[in-house]
Amino acid sequence: VRITRIDELSDAFGKLQKGDILTEIDGYKVSFDGKVSIPGIGQRLDHEFLYQTKFIGDSVKIKVLRENPEHGKNEVHELEIQLKYLPG
Image (cartoon, rainbow, N blue to C red):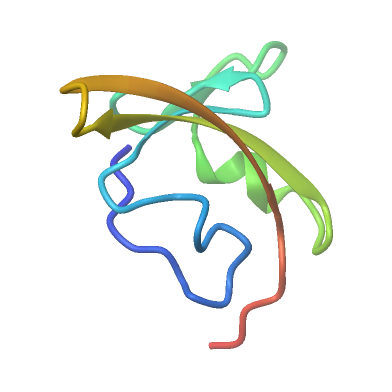
């Protein structure tokens, strides 16, 4: 899942970058189609399920793949983002 926009009011602003590729949420691998496999559920779910089950103020730990233009390589970045209420 490629990040295409980051809301300026979110905690992710300044942490995520446009073009980052989301690879993991709270230890669950995100596949190329945006689905995650959760043990015990028996089906693959959209990655949004993982943060929609959380509350405002909770944190989400994610991993993203980010291009490093200086080295021409992709690097894994581990980020923690606190969920906030965003109007609109």
